[in-house]
Length: 62
Image 1 (cartoon, helix red, strand yellow):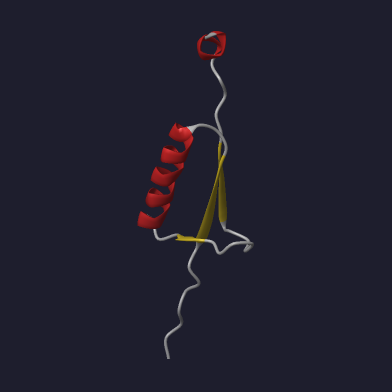
Image 2 (spheres, rainbow, N blue to C red):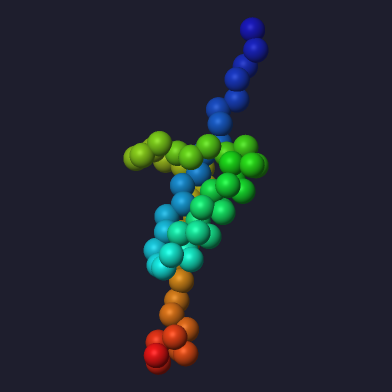
């Protein structure tokens, strides 16, 4: 009998612009390459990434 390891899970929460969505997709891909699986909806993840941004002064002045 062999023991199976419980897969490590992640959740990426994105706030911000389209670039944040793209960055979150990249982060998800890197985590999956490292052996993580996306956590099911409502499940507690081993890793949670909050991807946010702040408006820079120059962009805000436009």
